[in-house]
Length: 570
Image (tube, rainbow, N blue to C red; front, side, top):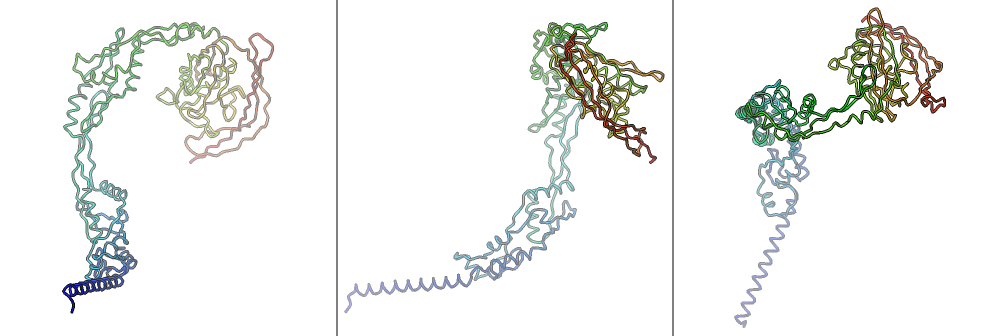
């Protein structure tokens, strides 16, 4: 007979084996359930209304892609106005694989996944991917069409007075609401209504009025005086207001100063007030070079003006004066420096002649005026374009004939090449260094053959370097033409003579024949053509009074033919 302990031990074994059996049985059933479910989507599952239940992962992804393909075009209206928008334009796409996985597709030991498979799936939203740049760009385009940009209030300055720009409330699409509405419309294949919301400008009408009261109106109420001690400069609102501005900062308009522009104005006015130092120079007096002495003056730190100007300019009448600390200063180029240039005599002169034309008198006269009095220190380079500037009406030039693409046409500055040629020859016989020159494309017989130059603003320049140890003064003048007489241009160089210059011109060779061109247009100018050719010119350098040749330079020139031009009627 078994004891009580033996019976209890046998009972425990039965319980253990029973539990183990149930575990094995459940495990086998779970494995069987997992194997049967596989990677299939739960029965009855749908994504955005597209049935994918019972399909494998790949099958469900293909079904979902096909089912949503026709949803690219969205029914959208902005503030009640219909507009065509596509999901592609918005950058909306469905991640089909991720959507199937979210619906229960794919293998998983998770109990919840197996439960969903056998009890049935739900209708889920797809997993969307959004190209943020495309989405934002599309809403920006819709804002451009249907919205209204907020207009910032502003204060400006014009003709010495304050001007204003009125602030305006804008309307834009509500971005947060639009995001949800468009995504849901795509998911549900339904309409999306996008609303416009008001957007306030950063600078309001009150901000504009405050800026007017506190700065702009006082700033333009009267002149500002700069007191340098021995000199004063009075600046009017018309002069300084272009250098004032109001800039938005933290919701208000803050005064700004264009410091470099103001500095230029102050320096120019200060120089004219007899307060600034005056450099010495050399001028022709009675046909002879004479040193004009330098003058000491006072100097100042522009930063002192910049720091205080905005406060002074907004001050009340009677307090619109700024005391500027000034110090005595000598001229940068002194009388001693000018004498050291040793500009004592005329070292070259050259004259060319031109037939009468009013435009030549104007353009040559203006160019001579700008060139006359130029002083080149040793090592400095003369640039005709740099000195004369662009040939425009504002610069005192008028239209005349120039050479363009081998034919004559009308443009500003016609005839200026005459003074380029004259200056080149004066440089040539002064013995200065040729840096840049370009002969005319075809030969013009009133110029020295092979020894002439043309200029074109921004393209061709006449440059030469003062490679002597002395200064060079350039003098230029014209004798205007008239209907009964030719005009002339004369350029002379004054310095200390460094070289005796002689020249020789070779024979013409390599002749080329002109063509005939038939052109249309109001600017067509007829021309009787002539041959082109090559020619060489030699420049010989000798020390003053010496017979021994120091060096020789050769200038090679190729002239193209001057084509015959026949103007046809349009």
